[in-house]
Length: 361
Ligand code: HEM
Image 1 (cartoon, rainbow, N blue to C red):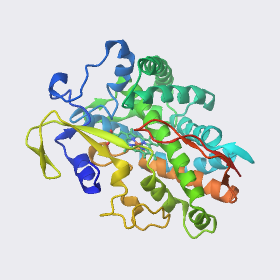
Image 2: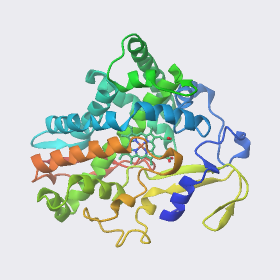
Image 3: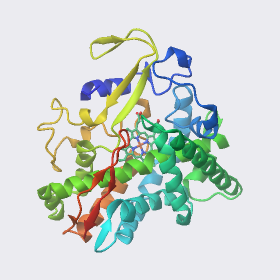
Image 4: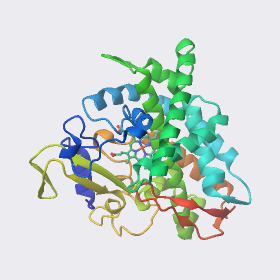
């Protein structure tokens, strides 16, 4: 699916799922492979991830996570984000991803979770290793590294839970421990999966939005100057960065029932549908002069970058605050920012970003 309307309709259709294992076997679903038992520690951390679940389990866990990841707790990160962005922004020549975007995004997540930033490097390494499992061509070595990372990450999160149960703090782990809806609380395994998906789903996309977005701004100098001159607010520009060069390009859904019609065609149960977010975000039916990069675009926020339907990004309010603060810090502290070396794209297809972006402030 490449059209905005079709991608959106698929995201909102309850007869399509990110998972099928609650309604059928692997051999009934196209391109589905049995879960490799050698990777069990990885699958254990996936088991309760929001991205793995479908209703009714998804509904229950998402409610509990939403009770912990409240608008208030996210809003409370606005000032710390602005401070961290200013503090961490280097002078002179620097590599945007390694020297700013990654340490910044990890510092924000450490603040949210209430964990010391000296574990930031581990969080980053575990996350990098684990997200390789979402690519289309994961090698054996990558799968093995992802499994080892999952086991270490699980042990680390387990070590955070018990102290908070004894002595609650003002952080997300405590709120997950305390979260409760009518039918109970989250188990430790569910808390572990949730923390891991929040970190992995969260920081890679935020870092790549900054890489892709700053490159777009510097390649379209007039757009950058509109931010520097104050004609356009960073919050508005963030929407166009996500629309024009989204950090997540492809999501898939399985058709869970017979009789489903997509874009005027019947698609049988068991089929797999690919949703191309990058294409949907450039659909001329929705965005005028869709290939033009325009930070003042009135309807940029209609992009599909955060998804839609029941799996719509739960971290979108945080991503927006985080990206706005980073962009504001860059614009205010480094108005003369420029690219000093043409960057290289990463070779991934799903998680789309740059390997490096060398800049001079
Ligand atoms: C620019 C940054 C981000 C982008 C573009 C993005 C994009 C997305 C998209 C497209 C989905 C839906 C996937 C699907 O429908 O198959 C999603 C889900 C999710 N995102 Fe984000 N995200 C971003 C930042 C974050 C952050 C900062 C967090 C958390 C701190 C986060 C946590 C999640 C979680 C937990 C889900 C799963 C929700 C569910 O399945 O119910 N994301 N994100």
